[in-house]
Length: 485
Image (cartoon, rainbow, N blue to C red; front, side, top):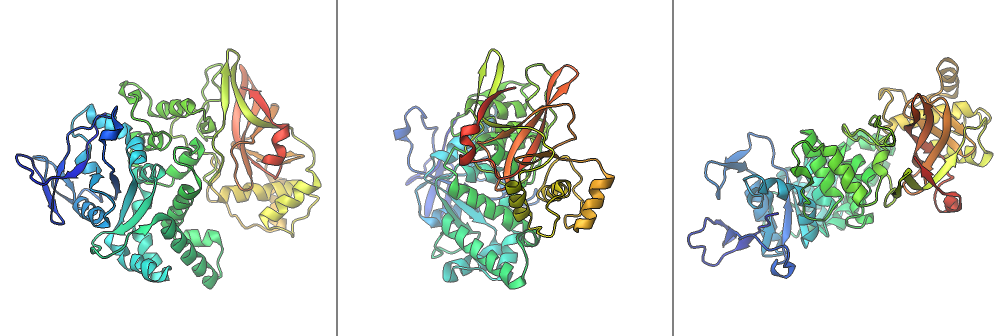
């Protein structure tokens, strides 16, 4: 991997330089990664290139163009005065292959090794950013301005933030006296402003998200960065977060996903011409002993012994909702793959009363008839659809009366499995069920992902799904097993 930085040069003789903020900036010679002490403290710069019309001549390369936002981003980073060396993609990614590819594969390493990441938002956010500095909050108009910014929707900016030690936010065109906003402060100011607006308008979280989808995405990203240690995002967290981004092509999708789960320089996995990018991501996760990618809505492999494994078309998560937990651990033996920390459940005619009450609390549906588990289960299905359950129509009405739910149950086959411990919603109807496995290592606030093992024509097959209930977590640890797939 070729690693270079933009550094200050006192006398840039015979070298192309960029003059900014009264200094000459040149591209360094490649640093030796085997001698980390030789690499100076540096900041990474994260920004959005814009569309293809926003281009200008590249100052360091002949017959090449670059984004019109590159120089403003570089200028903003210099004014932030955090370091005297910078990594910025336009100048520091080698233009020729294979060096370019190896650098792109190592973006996780590059951002992880930096002292901080300076995020430049668009100039349209200036009013909101100044409000944060002066008042610690943002008006509704300011929130609308922040909503227009595209930084939180881009693929590459996700992995850049995933591997950041510290964030600082600036905006394009800010003067030298603007104080960069620390990431945690930005998160707190944004969250406070959104909650204040929600209260003023008398709306719930779903309505607020529909008003500000980009800001909701940004808030989730910042929350994820605050609570997740660097280099410890589970595959499922990455899969979920990345699906909210603008995906230009499938290879860039998996580049960004892979860089978000590793902080090491490229091992050259992408160097194989026929290598499936999804397989590179899954192999990287396996190297981290994290198999949570199995909770994808993709079809399963048909190869005997690998029927638990997604084919890896897009690796969309079974549920587009933030999960927590370090990883889904597993180990291999000659017999096959053993998932660790799993709970084994079975289909039941009725739920335990305590679980039923908890689910009703989660649904906020006290008017539902408690004795009718099927009605309660159907309400869970509808709620999960609203939260982004994959494999079902996305246009279902979420708010149904008890009578409408009862009619739905009567006239349609069930899309759920009732357990003593709660409800399991498989991606597709499951019959000839052998067992139901639920993770006790990866969670949602209302349950956990899992698999239904069914009897297929040529052996066991697996259907991914969502468990809703409160029988997971530390109180269930004593009941966990290692499950052979």
